[in-house]
Image 1 (cartoon, rainbow, N blue to C red):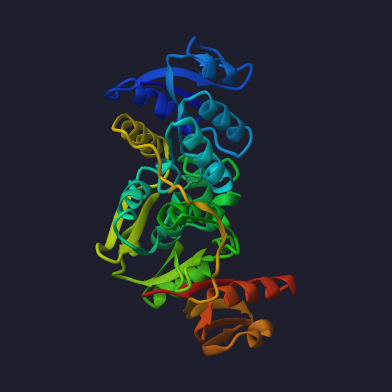
Image 2: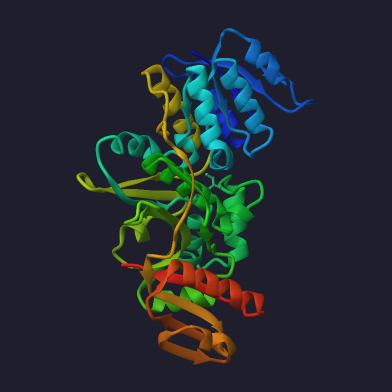
Length: 382
Ligand code: HSE
């Protein structure tokens, strides 16, 4: 099967090169921006790709929702299988793309969009057919894991760790999506869509790592904790879906603590299968390209979809799950939280809260920030 590639950046170059060596797959044209077609295999028109009968599949690795969506729709309508690593596209338009793929009798696969090289969505899409997925999530952003690990183990400061992650090609073009938790949130949205046929697009909560300081890291370390940015999703007893991202403090010994650098750890818990854990590189050229190629090989074997026919957009409900939180904030704001314990030094309070819902903690953080209080919070995991 000849595969056209949309985009020739970090991942696009990897996909094109891997296509040259993969079984059953062939290099097709590569779509680049006008003015960048400096080799015979590079083209600047999606129409040319759609009209080429020798192209069987299109792999989109350009990122962003537009024009990626318009190109995806054109490719699906032209009867090309469509594979993407673009989480922003699938989070925004996944249900529409699924419908277009069904209408046109072609495949729509996106396992590279969550977990980089880690075969998480692929396995989840198979498991959910026969097992009930009780919960899912994990470390789904390589950039922030690299940063937290470098801050904790190498003593780097925040700016240094971010610059390194960018230099290594892990971060998004605008790294705000990484450090704010948005990138991980998009990935947990996709995992929920695969597991529960509900793509949560409202009611989502994400807290990133922008406010973590070297002093916070030293504080956790001194108490035997490691901080990781975790995405979490699952189904509430009433059938609604919860989905959120936040920093979590984990006791040394938790599997997530040994996940270093840009690695991801994705897990799901099946009612029958029990806990399943997948670890691998979640970002970068070759890991992500390998997941795109894996999806293309799945198409050769007959796989057509990762989303069930009934998949639809839904509102997330994060009110049920209650946790303890570590919160560092100005002493003047400490009274806004119900604390189980508190330490105060030089006007800075470090609290452990009483159990409270994810919805309440994220809401309080928003209120305190709006009133001028700079804070960092993390839930306390096992
Ligand atoms: N910026 C993303 C990350 C790339 O760091 O995980 C892979 O999705």
